[in-house]
Length: 306
View 1 (tube, one colour):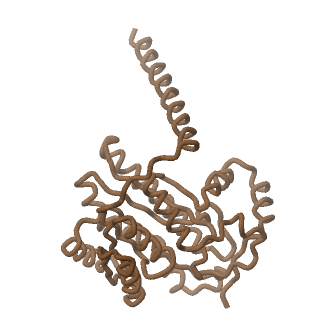
View 2: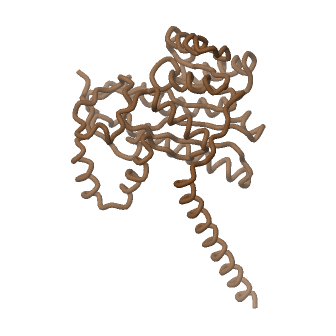
View 3: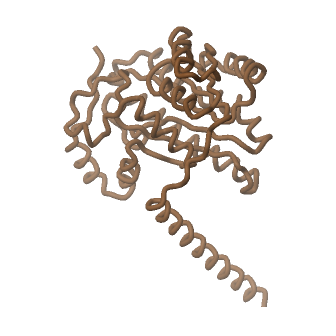
């Protein structure tokens, strides 16, 4: 009798699982044709790392223009203040600049406490700071390797440890991580950069699942991982791309706009342009030789630094 009862429970669980899978599949298809409403960020406190230039600067301006209070972090005090000044020039006065080395845990916690006292609790955290050295692995120094890992990956840990506890306490908040399409493909001259971006992808998945597990599914904190492709930030020279328009070739301003949209629509993952994510996910399905044949046909390669 007990075996029959257990069997019926298992069958009911399997049927319920199938129904949930079908529901989520239909929900996913529905959102393709009916875009999710963008939530307001007016009044939110948005902290952006690497706000002194490139995508980070445009993110700060973009969020400020939508009515958010923007907290700009960057090691370069001068360019960071320039970002805040540009925000104030468009009539937005709720922008603050803080100099901080996000690779230094003590400094991160010290500046984070200062932000809480002077501005308030951060409700949207954008881990954008990044760097790279476009070189062959054997040409990279130990300092260069450590620098890329510290900025692109380790800083995410310090920022999460500094700001996530308050979000957990209030059961509210949003964390955005800027990864890269190279998180899915180990590109030439990207032997350090690509692994850091893959690790960011895994970190965001893990922390999302960790909060979901410990809250028993009741966590309201959102996580968004963004995978930009080619953005003209000046960090690398891309002269060997066969079809640049297909890869995006976006300005930092356009990329920032799409990142903000992804956060406002609560996407868990989003590539820029959006069509790249499903294409890259085929890598786990297609035979290895087929994928690399297609990849090589695009002629994607960043020029090595001198």
